[in-house]
Length: 408
Ligand code: NIG
Image 1: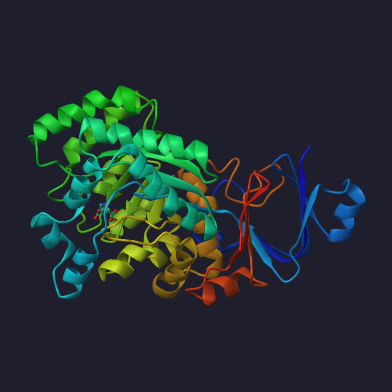
Image 2 (image 1 turned 60 degrees about the vertical axis):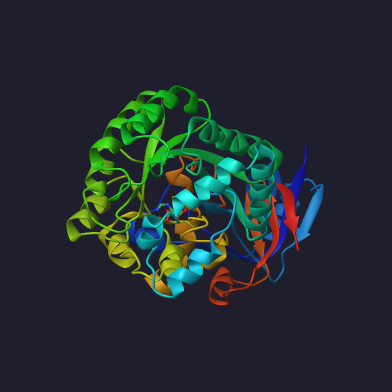
């Protein structure tokens, strides 16, 4: 039996349970000078170094974590990982005054990445995404939700799901696939033809994806199109998690809650009524701090959501148009510095609550006996220092299921 002892960590910091809502997000459990004993990928004990030495046989591998903080593996619950091409020219256009919507209406935006992605072979897409995954892993991400949505035709959307499935088997980060065929309407068929295609694809998609997503926004998918698609998708077992209220507040939150969405993501434009509805619900409010940073628009009302009692997660939204970042340590920093989360809340949002939004918090998202040993050993003695000392990769060692998968 493989065993791993993380010896004498200066600090272990973790949220606990299945999720934390509202002000409970601040209640992070802290242990000082503590060890973790892992057997067959599962956390078996958390205790003083002496206690664990006396209670367990010598571990097959020991990592000395003196002077290091240990946190749960980071869970990035909103990404658009698989795409070809790059959009730094749009970045420059935005810096000279063009808005995200103006660029999209002139043929840039999502459709420009669709065009590059359709031209790429499956192997090319895999190798591009594999490089991004290795960067995410190095920064402590051990689980990642991955959306399709840059194919927008049958062949490429299914190819993207195959890429996610193959990469899931070939590298350490657990990938959770979401079908986002409803990301934009493609230029080469009518809206009604495309909606028909999305409906027809659902039975096949449901064998590969866990969630259905749609970009609910003016010029993208309206409430009725989203509702009909999601209700049908649910019949095939695909649970909704939706892009809503990014640029406008047009009923996406109420629709998502009616549909029983597991997560509603973006939420930059929220009314007080919508904040109240989210706070009363079991639906996770997934906020994407680096989009506001990257696009230079307002941040979502994170503080009010948390103070009202919502279950808040944070994610990178890694994509070429609105957040070319997959470093979850930076996401936590921006959540604190710009959205007024406490470091404790940011940790809970990037681990336990993100796991809950993916239906994985029974086994992932916290450092607790019986959970999978997905851990990040930091090069700082406290996790707060790693958030505060921003712009640096503070991962020293990344552990997935009790196995060291990255070390600096
Ligand atoms: O979440 N808003 C929709 N999707 C992405 C942007 C995708 C793109 O610009 O390529 C987002 O911000």
